[in-house]
Amino acid sequence: MRTLLGLSFLTILACGKKPGSYEIKSASEDAQVDQLRAEADSLWEERGNKDQLLKSLDAYEQLFAQNPTDKEVAARLVRGWYFYGDAHESEIEAKRSAWDKAFTFGDKCLSINPAYAAAIANKESREAAAVHLTKEDVPCTYWTASALGKWAKAGGLAVTLKHIGTAEEFMKKIEEHEPTYFYGAVNRYWGALYAGKPSFAGQDLERSQAEFEKSMDISADYLGTRILYADYWATKNQDQIAVFDEMVQYVMQVDLDALDPALRPENEAEKRKAEALWAQRADLFLEAPEPAPLTVELPQPKMEEQEAQMEEPSIQDPPAESPKGEASEGEATEAPAAE
Image 1 (cartoon, rainbow, N blue to C red):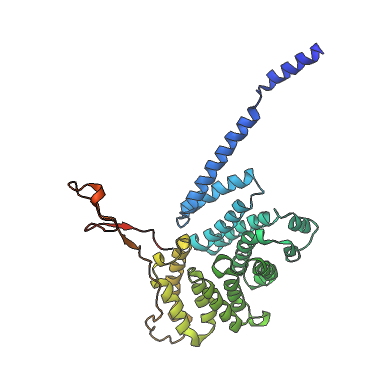
Image 2: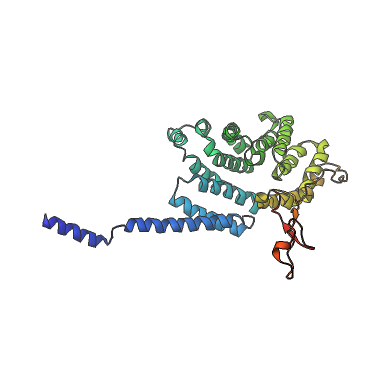
């Protein structure tokens, strides 16, 4: 027994571990993870800057490597690489590379769902496995479908037709679980899909227009809906140049301070797309007339409310004698900005 005790003591010394050392290490690691997550989130707020977005994605990739079951981090990676390709790259191959990364992380994100992962492991198609996707999977599902759609479209018609079924099944699950997700994303996607399909594969311009209108009814804050409406739908109809003009001019002229601040990086990118589309107007429409001025009323930034401030007593007057409810000249308190 004495020998065993001695061996145990030597083993502890050899390992160099003290009681509680694992807990201390775990707490230290947790603090490092929290710090890395805070840095990633802070950099994400500056995703309108290409370099800051890349730094953010690098931090999120480190976080995901440490915890590959974190759906929130995985979804941020899918959305981030999608946005990188959409907003920060101009060459088609660079865009497809970014969207391919987005789709790769999307596969990993969706596979955090054990039922979906089991279906894929059993050689079921993504279309068939989509039946297992839940409301918790909506962010990953949407950004994965969006990345797949963009990547496929940039690869040509044959690639698009090969993968369009998967994207459609993913969108149907989002429509089932959270139909108004991301500023009317489902209707926006259907609008682009039914305008972008070839006529022999189910193009439906009437439905496309209805879906775009529904998306804008759900939320007018995301300018991407108007850009897709102009680019995908209006350009298919030579007699719909007025719709093109209205959508594109709206995006170019609207004040971003009047829209959801959380969308500012995305909306800045959509404004750049609007400028590029406007420059192509004469090529997109034969004998294009002079554009009519925009007649739609643009949203205006909300002004901060002002409210009267209690009168500050003078040095000579005792506080008890100052009348309640009156504001001294030139003084006012600022109320929080209206949301």
